[in-house]
Length: 73
Image 1 (cartoon, rainbow, N blue to C red):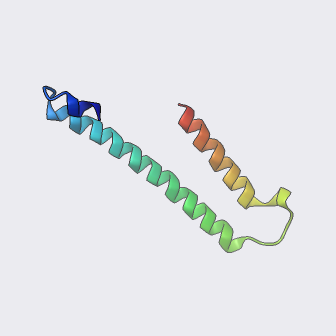
Image 2: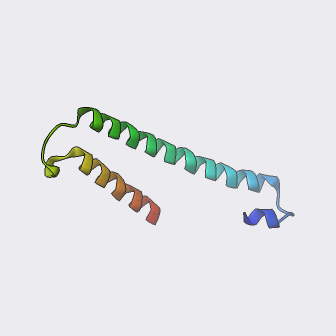
Image 3: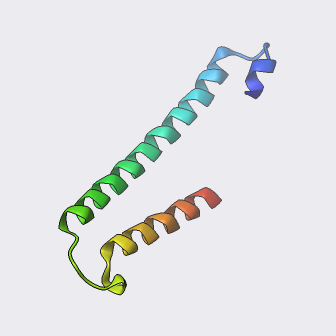
């Protein structure tokens, strides 16, 4: 952590950085919880069919795409 070497900075700066990290962790938890719920729903009602019609594949592909888009920002 770069702030640890800057001992003349105020503690409030450390708190601001920690708050940003906490907000990011909370945002990721919300995303992962949504993914967990969608996967649970799909597993519970997954039937027989063709891969082209598979909502599990579609959901995972959509989530993977959104994750990569977010990481590029």
